[in-house]
Length: 116
Length: 420
Image 1: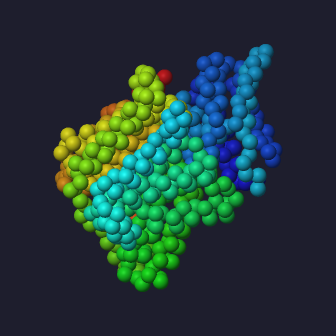
Image 2: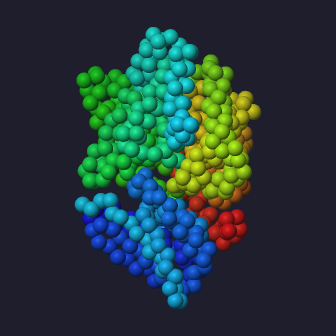
Image 3: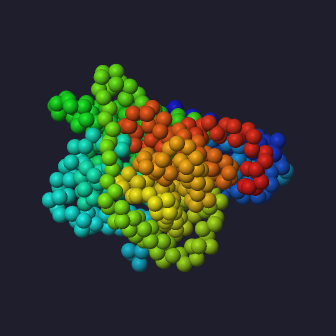
């Protein structure tokens, strides 16, 4: 795996954690599952407002942009604003939301471009 | 209908190319364009070299058109759809083709980035933003060949190798510098190039090679350039309303954006709204110059086109007007003067720090614009003139100085009030 992919993954974790914390979510799990083809980030949170989930789906669910693969990802996780997910949205291929009994689960999938 | 779709998809770039290409042959004869173009290609091109003075208006427009054509073909070959960063990149290249870039001095830098992508086993396409903005250091190539008095058999390989080296180190370096100003300097690559330019300048200086400055500018085509700028803006305005008659209602949503890197107005707000913003930014740029009685020359025309391009990539009236006002204050309240072309350019390129106003409000934006004016001349002396994006170099310092402090003192007050 290219080192760049891992560096981007670590920034995504930082950005997601910061975003959730800035929205006052104090109790969440963030799972990281990686193989040679793709990576999944799974967020499980009990008290997360629907409007925040909708915002995340809107911003992260947009089409992946190749231009940002190199330029801009370093800015992730380095903001004090609650509403900045634009760069993250350019790096994630798919976001899925599941509403379970007492928590919401968001699965973000990113397909690796550089396997070597 | 197909033509409308094509124009929409390409954000009018083919139309702009045709207009500029045709204008070249209206202003000058083919022979004048040919001889002027040769003079442009052989110019050292260091900041500030007005290609209109060096080669004439026809040859300069020919240079701009060929650069646009080359990059549009490159983008098509790479399979890119139009996006905000790409549109800004092409317009920036076009703008700086009025004063420093030509097809000859840009290619070695593209090659350097290509080699970097290959060695890192990464896709060249991924570097497209860096590629489009990389040619800010293209005077390095021209200077080594035509500005050093070296024989061509030595100067040509030296210039090409220097350009390839600059291109090779730029992707990694620009990714690093973006953290320095945290995305609040829209000309991030300009900042990275400023540091590289400084390195090349000190190396040359250590071998007793004197760096020559660009020279005087030509204001004789002021009226023509104003009309060209207004005409291009009008084309974007008409296209915006043709594609979407209700575009004006959607425009305020774009202006809520802070403009911080990496924003993409085409993706977020669509082509018609972005076209309207491009037009408005063009009108504002020309309007400010005319109100202050400032003349348009090659470099200033480059500034207007760059601002229009960034109308798709972070700039809009709400975040630009405060920093421009701050820059104006910086000139009138200090011993600087608009008699200097550098100050006129700074008045336009101060919009590099427009995300500061977009994020922290107009008052902070005015302060940022004021500081930018103070730093810009020092930045030029520091980087030596190989970095055409001198204001991007200065803006990096302005943002890096202000943002850490602003984030600490304002995050729980004004920012949350404005954006929540």
